[in-house]
Image (cartoon, rainbow, N blue to C red; front, side, top):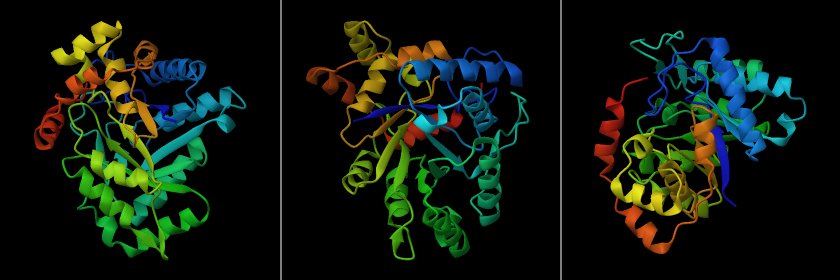
Length: 305
């Protein structure tokens, strides 16, 4: 059964590459309150999976304080986090650089300790944005340390981004440490505009790898700049284009977990509206795909707001 998760990428820091944010740059306390309100709605709606990362500003901290203030909930939830990027903007929405990527042993160790300090031990710990050129693939010391964490019972995975996602998925899942797969979960971008990783995710799912899909709304493009075909289907169901786009993700047979990247409770409420697509609607929506290179070039050009 496909599950819905709430990702805190757009809630843990004052800026992100998402269209549809309200443009208000909040203080830490204000954004913590907004995050908690969104988490409360998620809980009431039955969402029990929450996804964060070290680079999501203070997302891990906000989730940790939410759990601390609501005893008993952590045990009922699945928490995934990521290492590999660090947040560098210092809460400045106009910072020139918001995050820096580093796949090294030292960074892995540092960020694992940081995550456990503010959030405890996550149920799934992922390499953030593993690409085919990552130094991780040739770093035996790093792979060995990650294998040790796996052997302690922590499930490991990785996320992917960019036009070579499919290659990254296949190469990442082929990694073994001490004769056993290192990763048993993958989190990739799949949406109506960018479905190119689909075959690789299908292969992963068939091999019993847990498949999570992020950016199902294309960082807000499928809402703010919704194509006519998507709007037509949404109007037929009397819902927002976000609900239709996420339903299209959830209906993919290889998807186990669909992430909502909602920036506030109202967006999450709309994201969670149930929709069942008809066959002719699926056909209409399948025609929205664009070349992967074009999609990722557009995403790279998006401003942090």
